Length: 170
Image 1 (cartoon, rainbow, N blue to C red):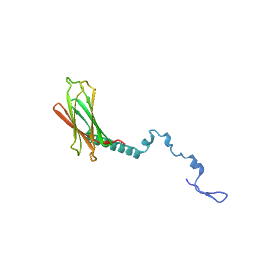
Image 2: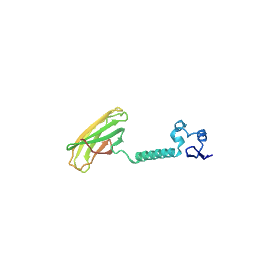
Image 3: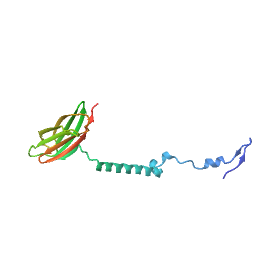
């Protein structure tokens, strides 16, 4: 109940101090069980919305963005990398054996640049033991407008084309 009292110097008091001090104080947020999200429902919903959007983004990116510079062919994992330095594109194709083979097959690789008629043919024997790697390297001249390096890899009667954009070395 609000009291209206007048003090000796002419001031009016519109509440009772003893009544105000006897009431319970504001809740202590630091002692709340469950942390900030349990006490604030809108923050919990916001956090769950953000997590759901991130999950959807990762799934969509994983489904629709296939790596065109990696591949598998006849029991070998293939990885293509390309680097531009001065007037040349340095290309590396790494072939890793995924299983032990009975015979050592040959690999034929044709390296070429997008927008260029120049190509380089490389041939080598592949490793037989599982986990072993073979690295094929090539250097192709750059004329200015090439953006991608392509490698057509043939093992036995099967082939695959790998693409990689050329990154510049500063």
